[in-house]
Image 1 (spheres, one colour):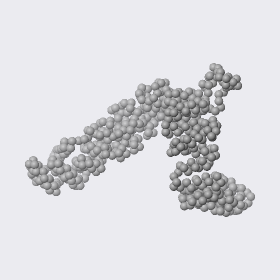
Image 2: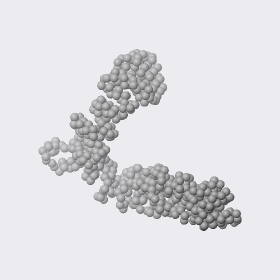
Image 3: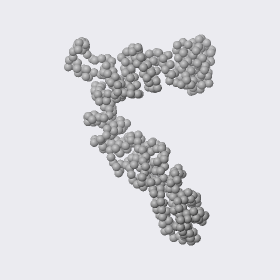
Length: 557
């Protein structure tokens, strides 16, 4: 989905004097319609001030205006004072007067609009924005729009209010304002509002791109039916592949796989694909193995470096070989073939050799994490082909040296060395991933030492876990196993019991109490074993091992 950026709003870079004189004149005109007699003294004072302004004595005029503020009452008089402050370019005094006037008439829209404008002019946008809620629905919403745009230009997307842009739209309908409101709402995960604004755009500008953007918003907000409604009418003649791809995603999420496959098939039939997704998705959803293979091969012919396709192709490998009869096998070995044999080859599942060739080609086109994933697919395939560890391991170690920070590679290496029972290497790799200060380092090192028979060294590491809330209970359990191995049964029971007390939950505690009971049973302390097992089952009634041992002990009691 296109990410909309905020744009400057030229329409609201108001000329200060024209705007203010228009605003104030309008307000005074409206106020003048009321049958109120002006304060004669106040009017005389204003005339005197006007004469000073006309004679070029702004300092004297400013002093008189400040003194006159003490006698001002009603918004009309305050606006008259503020207007003259602006005439002599004393914006500071105008702002001070507006603040004083609002302190006396806090709900006055005219004064609020004027102060918001003055604050914005002085760069005090944060203070000006506080007037936005009052002004956005008033006859001064243009001022609200001006304040909102200025704030938007100074704020990050995440800090913006979409209503700033909607107010601009209300004053001057321009789709750029709505698009900004869409982007901000979507960023805040208010997809319902974002979709409403996106639909407003379509009323005046119903283009394929705008429909696509609205559909993406609908899809992100899980309004699946709306996505389909937006894109179905333009699907047949869409210029962008994004339209059918988003539409097919909506069909899949709606559980309409047949319609999704129809969309992908129509894209494939046009023979001008610029993206592999249609071919890959059609193959992925195809139940027939032969057609799946052919579609994947078509995808890899056009897009040989596309990782999802080459991975699916490699994982479709059949290791049983072709279904040739004995005679056909002999002919194949000799380099001969028949029409029947050719048909069997075409219909055959992916062969390991074909899969390897595809992976090798893809690897030459990939870089970074994509390259690592393709190489791991190749190692996985070689492992299934029962290649020896001496063939696979050098390649794996080369990758680990080249890409030491890759978590995907580290996870595969840990899995691989564990599968082939090289636990020391697996533990070493796992420890290497953690910093020296990791709270799990001592625990993992201890387990690694246990696996090679170095029990005393392991015990020292487990004992160093004392006081560590995350690992102490596991370390105590391991110490219990070491003590049992050394036939120090009383100490083993104590360590398991202490570990159970420190365990993070009742389930783990129940398991460790079972271990203590098991040792007690082995040394023929049946009564105590039965008591401990009863407590273990209180902690976790689903502890079937404790239940089974308790049943056995009670049977021979």
